[in-house]
Length: 384
Image (tube, rainbow, N blue to C red; front, side, top):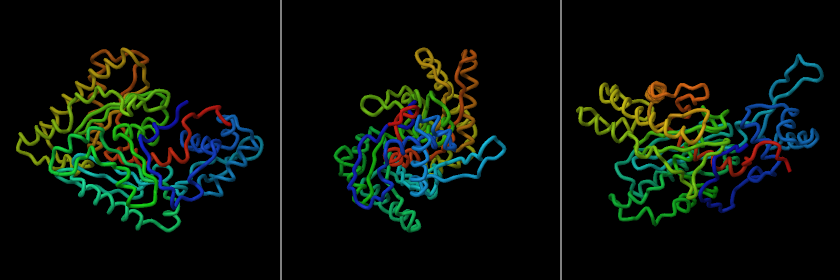
């Protein structure tokens, strides 16, 4: 089955400062991919899932343990024969920086090898002026690295960047520099010796939910992201489809967005700044928010019903740059409206909120170096 999100659209790798964990053999990548998918597996289970011999599994596991990429759990007793020792990825095995560049803000995270967020920053700006944006990125990268222990810095394997495809519209704002002429990965690569990976922001967010969120155990799901620019992605056979040009057709781009909510909030005489400045905590917007949730849920429900005429999925994931309580309300309302519209058959997908939170685009960006350095595309009986 397909395991990971699509590879980064573009990569800049200057090749300096990378340690021995940068490049792994295919079979080592296969073992780590299985552990990421299943959480923990015994050596015997790794062999069953991968088709590798017991001796090969033992050699690989010892090598990965030596490089601190995997760790052994407590022995599981009570069965016939010797105790079973579960293996799992080591959170300290590798680290990556993820940065989301948006029209109104930047998010930066330091992620460990199992998706844990060690550091998280957020900056707002009125316009995406390139000098401001790259200055903030440099500050964040330097601050994140300064806050790491020496051995952790040695295991920092890359920087992932996520941003929208339509940056050309930013060029008509306040800056004299045209975003379409900027090589983002080259600019970021100036700030460190680490390789830089670039991906579409919604594709990256869907990948974060696939690897670390509510869809981790799913093979097929539809992903809807509601932000200032709403979009959707389709995940089939555990693979995010990003389309021929790295960006899937997004029916959700015509849906209600947080920009629509902002208009209603301002019209009601309320402060709209927290919508972008505080994605994890909004004030009570009362009727303006209630109406927006109902309208957005109605449009999402219609999109879901249309989608199901040509593709089957296990679940519909609702995500967005909003507090968890609002995301949960939106998902519940979508599910209710979809059921009322006829989504009641036994094999119909469930509707659930995403778990990665409002920083999912940065988390997805941080996963790009891990995918490139340590994972395989196909997980199953595909050992070399």
